[in-house]
Image (cartoon, rainbow, N blue to C red):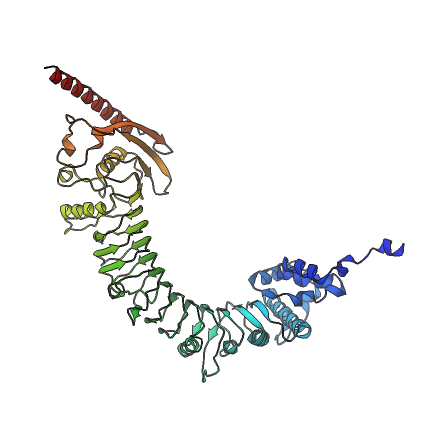
Length: 565
């Protein structure tokens, strides 16, 4: 009866496998809080395979601290190595309490964990690197050095010199993330050795010593598969030699980096973004170094034509993105797997020779001061996105520019979907006298989308429709969008299967492709928004449709009269 009134401690009687299952579904804060359930659960969290004392854990602690009453003893107690405690701010006390909590958790872990147990993942965040915090972090590093597979440490401050170098001699770490700290060596760095390292991520380091990086890449060259350097200073040359298993390289915003040297045949994913104000050079030491590339992303790097022209073929290359590459002039890309090519703001690029049988998407963006490139293509584009701006200046030759534009657009005549975006109507509205010189370049396009990125197209929508129907005489759909990329007006067009010999149209009499006016059968206009009051397109299509039907009827009567005669 007494047992019934008090109730059984059923939670303490749960089997170990059920307790582990419950713990695995909890966040780190709740897992540690289970210590208050009963004596049996007090140190259950120590058996977890992963510890996550990251930023979210710190946020939970801050919420707990902020909700304490102002005169709570924990807000008034003295702290280790804290000078003038009575005048410390709440923020300083909060950070000191958090570091103290990390130290207490570490001591519990060291006492209760089995010596041979290895953590799969350890995540540690420290808000400020005081002397006390550095001591606690060093102790956690000692644990990570021998008992952790994946280690992630981050701090918003650079920390004390040489404080973090010890983690670079771990025998168990396979994946390492260091964020916000500094790796500075004032002595020899012979101790660096990570024999099991497969992934290395340095993120926003305040300083990364060149010597440390060189030796680190040399010592783990046989196992490293992914290298990520995001932000920071100190590194001037990135040498990738002897890394036989390196597949993924990402380098971004390294302000001092002058040169990237690649000499590895296993590289599959290469990303270089904004390196030293577009002055960082990319050098491939062997023609076979990039043969296995699958994705290439270059933004703001001094990559030259030799990177492409010295390689006969990229047999596995699927996607290429080139943004803000001022040294590119004339490149050649051959790949039987290439499906996507994205080129933007390459001011000196004048010619692309492209041989890719599986090309699916092509995007090209030219600014005001850039000319239209010459595209020598041996592929059929499925989806194409073009962002075009006509150059300005006294030396601008409209006939030459429009001739290049028409020749460039002719490469996409068989695209299923084509998007043309511009901020000037002069790009697409070709003067009537120039239309007679050229043939419509987009005769095979089925779905055409026009995007005007500046002012509204309400007043010129009829001129835009007429110009687009000259570019593409037989599209199934034409969509008009404004700068928010939402469709404002759509045309759905149907055409006759064939036309009679007597039908003619002045605008296309000399062209091999029949004008839309000669074969229009029916149309449908869908007003999405914005252009609902623009009936000029409807009137134009209705007028041309009636005119074509009248011409067809007259032609049939003339044909029957000729037969009877």
